[in-house]
Image (spheres, rainbow, N blue to C red):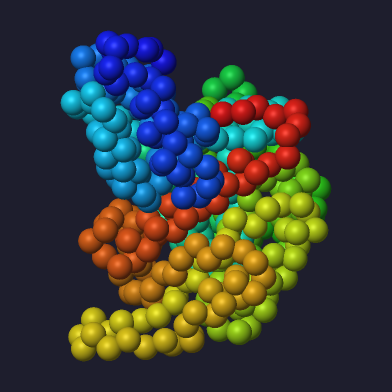
Amino acid sequence: MGIFGSAGGANEAAVLQALRGLRDPDLQQDVVTLGFVKDLNIASGNVSFSLELTTPACPVKDQLKAEAERLVSAVPGVQRVDVRMTFQVTTKQTHQTRTLIPEVRNTIAVASGKGGVGKSTVAVNLAVALKRYGATVGLMDADVYGPSIPILMGASDPPQMSQNRIVPPVTQGVKMISMGYFLPKNEAVIWRGPMLHKMIQQFLGEVEWGELDYLVIDLPPGTGDIQLSLCQTIPLTGAVIVSTPQDLALEVASKAIAMFKKLNTPILGVVENMSYYVCSHCGERDDIFGHGGARKASAQLGYPFLGEVPLNSAIRTASDNGQPAVLEGENTPYGRAFLDIASATAAQISIANFNAPQGPVIEG
């Protein structure tokens, strides 16, 4: 940071003191203490600096920018304020992740206790939403029993090989890998634990992921060998649990949560999919599977509620066409829902990294 200005005018100390009044809503500390203020310059009453956030998916970045401008504008001697919003996604890599995926900052497992809750759809739209916010993202399809990610992403180009490493195809700006690329069509996977473990090792250590802010991992439903192998191979940043509102799905989802707790994997939060239905003809709302059950369950269990996605045939149509529904952005309730879930997930990752125990890690 540079110190400029004449006697009686604005100076660095005064500007920083003003910015101490701006707090990050997730990390609950002021932006100066957090080290978010970068490249501060003051010249002839003109103040410029960057606010470097922990994720590009911050839902309140516009409010933070406006409040920073207001606070600094009130400093005596300041005539003009220029605030640039930047980001550096945080990480708490361990030795294990550094060895297998050295340039991947965060790993997000998307899981469910049972099939049929739309877990893969949530995983795909979470990955694409994070990319739309400006993050670098990868998507790993670990659901070998039903590898649907290539279909949902509309990805027809297969992976390539380069120097004995797998180069993943890129679709919608997201790097992808899936067993769907390697299996003959309509062939079932009948693998024992060691083969599943080897696949996890290869998808992590032999794929050229490069530098990623987030690697989203779509897990098979339930609590089987793949979940165990993944959590034993690398410490995950956290897991997102997908459920529908009905009691049975929530009861099964709680078993998935219990599994991740036993494996020392943080729970980032719960998503309620197929949360409600709004008739396209009459506009009447129908809570087909009930409503709000996942929100109540997450509150009872003490985990964040990341958001709810409506039941809408357009999501199914978009998925069948290989166009993730979030690509429609804020124009639809479901597009907005997926963007909000991505923001909430990114926020929980920032909190988890900020509160992680200190140890032999790479700080980002």
